[in-house]
Length: 253
Image 1 (tube, one colour):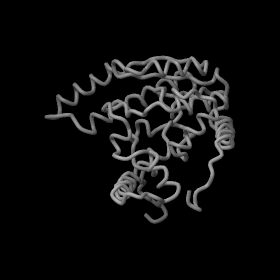
Image 2: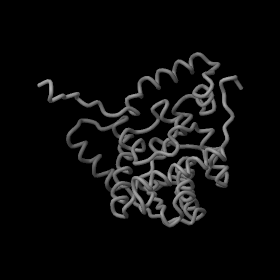
Image 3: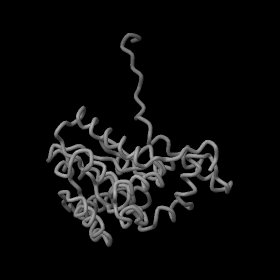
Image 4: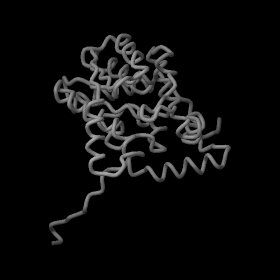
């Protein structure tokens, strides 16, 4: 470990996040439900567990949103059962196929990232529809590692009302999950993007352990990987920044 690396106190960070969630709801939605999209992966599992600890299980609603059949949806059901929270399943298949069909009427082809990113954007629309129906606030479940290289869909899983994990790397999220007492099946579930069926690390071309070390310590022993991470980070910064606004000043016109 380099001198710049700081020991991660998962128990303290967990407590700090719980307090932050509680304070945020007091100021921005007192008495509201936390609405969490559940995939059964580490991020949604940890966010749901943090919300339960902060607000109580009766104030957390899990939403599962398969696109047709989801082979691992049972993990999400088991998480809801483990946390003893209310949950529902809203299948986006019909909506997805409807939009794809309409797009193909207007374009010669509808493939690539536009098609790949459609499901997460539909899911976020569902989460906000659910949230408004239950007087809720939508939890963002992205972590720092994913955001660093743009591994999130703008206005899809990159959206939300509050973001408990956005400043934590993957390894730190896992540590918080263990501190919360989550079983390994949730914390260590191999992350699959839910878009094209590949693991996150297959898509990225490097491991989260390598990425996390580079983020926290500035160390990446493989120059090609370091350059790739830097390129991805620079190219995707726009996803994390506020929408540019024309600086109109009526006093100058």
